[in-house]
Structures are given as C-alpha cells and as structure tokens.
Length: 325
Length: 297
Image 1 (tube, rainbow over the protein chains, first blue to last red):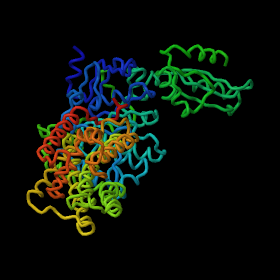
Image 2 (spheres, rainbow over the protein chains, first blue to last red):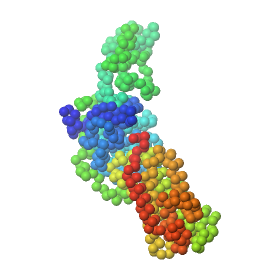
Image 3 (cartoon, chains in turn brown, orange):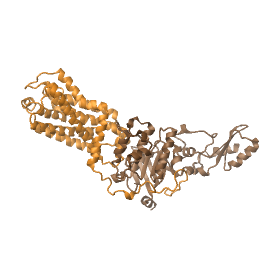
Image 4 (tube, each protein chain N blue to C red):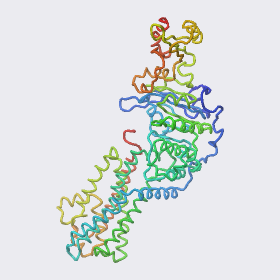
C-alpha cells in the first residue's frame, strides 16, 4: 500500500493520487499524481490549459475534484476548515484589488483573521513595501501589487504557500528581487508550490520541477536533471568551410581540440551547448504544440533537434548531423 | 515519484520543516481562530465604511442622490394632494423608502459582483475568516448608511420643505421597524441578486432598471393610488411598495390613510410582507451565493 504510506507521511506536505477533473466533456486533469515534501520549493510547469491552475485550485480548496485522493497538510482540501486555512497561504493568479484602502490597512486587516499572524509592519518590510505602507493599493505598480499579494499570502505564517504565476508581467529586475523574497521564505521552512510559465524561474527557485501536459504529470525531477538533461550529449557548432556545422558528442572537449588543430587556431562561430531546460521542456510537453513559449526561445545552435532521446523523435536528425560533420 | 530527490540546484541547503521562522504546527491552537466573531465583524464594518467614504462616486450616488431628487421634485411640485398633505411630504416618505432600497439592494447587487470579479471574495475565502464576517460587514455598512441617509434627508426636508417629523413615539417606533425590516429585506435581496449577473459589467445593466422600475410602480415618484390598478398589483408583490406605505404611516396624517388602496396603512401587512421577503432573501443568499466568478467553476 504505497499510496497509503505516502499519503500518511508527515514529511509530505502535498500528496495527490489519480486526480481527475472534467468540465463538461473537456478533461482538465486526467489522473495526476504529485508529492511535495515539506520544506521544498516545487515548481509546476506546463502550457496553458495543461491543468496547472485547476490542480492548484483543487489543492487550495477553491475547486472540487471529480476523483482521486488529495491530502494537503494531512487534510482533504475539498472540506477546508478555518484551522487548515490558517496553515495555508495562497497567492492567486489575479490580484484581488481592494479599492480605496492603504497597503498597511489591508495587511493589518488580514492579520486579524489568523490565530498566529505575523506583525503586519514586519511583513510589509519583508516584501519590500515599507515605502508604500500609506499608499492606496490601486496606486501600486504591477510588481508592488504582487508584493502585496505575497504579504497577504504570508501574513498568517503559513506552513505551505501556493504561488500561482507570481511574476507574470514583471521586468527582469523586479523578478530577481521577487525570487530573493521567495528564497528567504523557503529558508524559513515554508513549503512552496509554484506554478510558472517561466522556465528560468523554475530553474532558479525550484528544488524539483513537475511538468504537466494534457492533465498528467509527465515527469518530476530537479531542474538540472529534467529529462535526463545532465547525461545528454553536448552539441558543438561552428562555421566550417561549407557553412554551419553541428555535432552532437559525449566528448566535446576532444572535438574542440580536434577542430582547433584543423583550423590552426580560432574556430569560427564556435559554441558548445547542452540542451537547455527549455529544449527539454518543449520535448516533454510534445514539442511546443501550442506555440506558447516560442517567443522566449533563443536560438543558440544551428537547428539540431535537442529533444531528449527517450521521446524518440529528433534522434535521427541529430545523428545525421553528426555524420555530416 | 514518491522518492525524495535531494535538491541539487539553488535554494538554501538543509531546509527542513519548521527549521526556522516558526511554522511549527504544534504551536497552533487546535480549534482554529478563537478570535471573537463580533470583533472581526466590527472591523469588517469599519473596513467597508472606510472604503465607502473614500469612494466619491458611491457617496454621491448613495447618500446624496435621494436629497438631490427631493430638492428637485420638492421644488417642482408643491401642490396639495388631499387631506392637507403636500406632494413634498408624500415624496419624502417615498424617497426614504427608495433610499433604503438603493443602499441595500442596488448598491450591494452592483458592488458584490465587482468584488467577485476583482477576486476580493476569493481572497477572503483563502483566509480562515468565518464567511459570515463578510456579510456582517455588508449589513453593518448598509444599516449605517441607511440611518445616515434618513437623517440627512430629514435634515433637509424639515426646514426647507415643511415636512414635519413624526409626532408620536408610536410613529418613531414604526419608522424604526420599517427601516430595520425594509433594509434587511433589501440587503438580503441585494446579496442574493449579486449572483445573477455574469460579470460586474453586466451588473449595473441588470440591477439599475429593476430598481428604477420598482421606484416608478411603487409610489415613490407618483401617488400610488393614481397608478393603474394592474401596476399597483404588480408593485404589491415587491417590498418597496410596502416600505413606502410604512413610511407614509410615519410621515402622513392618519386621515390620509383613508386614501390608501385598502383604506388604511395596513401596518400589520407591511410587517408580514417585508418579513416574508427577508426569509426569501435569506434562503436565496444561502443557496446561491458564489465566492468565485462563474467561469472559475
């Protein structure tokens, strides 16, 4: 009874087995499994419509499931009671904006709802809104509003914090600041379940990443090992006499040395790359079928298909590239 | 998937549950928040009133609108409508009743969908706040505003439009319970109605005509007995007509009651109809209230 033991483990913050949810005849979540350990930052990755938000909302107690076992902090979130709510912090996708209230007023008001709330001023300092304490919430910038959302999410000193796409629309600097905040929370022992569109964010923050596609968990691994990334061959690219060349190899250093000898010095346009998290991710979710993250993609190699080998397709092209070199 | 893979990337090493920062579950009380409901409710009422007071459009719309209407109508029509009652006096009683309806029904039926769309309701639901606190906040706000509105209306009507205050304690008592029952019924119906519009944008479009039509057929702007009888009968199904009638019992002489459709103010009937609407509203609220947007499931 592996399921039962995993579900009962006090070191497990979130345990999900066979979760299903359908809307009409559309299946949003199709038998999803997930285990998040206490103290962990777990990132859920997946394209829009993969079932990320539905899953998160079921775990948050905002949505009812159709089937499956779910325990969050040892309780079924389908019947959230105030004691459970006080242990869970939620930062929703949209900002629930309060009209005509000041930052300090909102945070202090929400602090009253919790039995063991943190000091409102301390929390405001912590999320970096000290200068905005007296500002009306609708005058805040997007990043500042998100910080207020986080302040309300952590005011009750949650054991578990849900962050649903927390940095969407942030500029790079604001995103870095935000990551620091999340790391600080995690270092205090807060378990964090993060959903994100940004692979970089998952790579920066998460201890483990779960990739969701078509309502199922495709894989779970630390970012550096996702899709067998660490063991994959490197791709060496350069511009040869007949144009761009790419070779996939397990011994890139040796190849570069050979090339150096061939060219008698600098190799034109030389790059050595391993599949990025994004390459791996695109392969896992069925090759960017929905075209959702293509705009972020940076082409840093000549087009060698870097799909992980276990998914099959793409291998032959890599081999032909190797042979052509 | 149940195996623990040790973190190999960023993130502080050696994190364990409750290692720092005080999230030890054993420190929490077993029964959840034991904070007094009354205290939370009081804070919620203050929060609602603070938001209200800072929103100029709402202050204009809710508090001042009845006064403006009274000034306009009272200045245009000042004829005697029988039994020594001026149109202004008649209109004040109707305006008080319709002000209560606007504050309780119209304002809430528009404001709650906006809060739902903004995710404010979902955010409250994410906290351990007892759900009733939200409703206590709304009811407290409406009652406060209703009283403020009546006081303001009378403060203008008595000196400038020759309206006389209730002369007997029985009439003051009637004023009290009609305000209480009427506001309660309208507030509950406003909360219930708030689940009807698909979005906050359609809320105004749906709610405003309902409120306006009720005002026209319930004897706020026109003398009720001069309306066609089929219109009177439709109006009699809804609370506003009875609230107006109750207010007339407070502000108009007993003799004028003879002109009412039933030959009197029928206060017992006013109480029964409003109480029934309170029950209908409460049942609808409990059965239909949504904390999330419709598309959120």
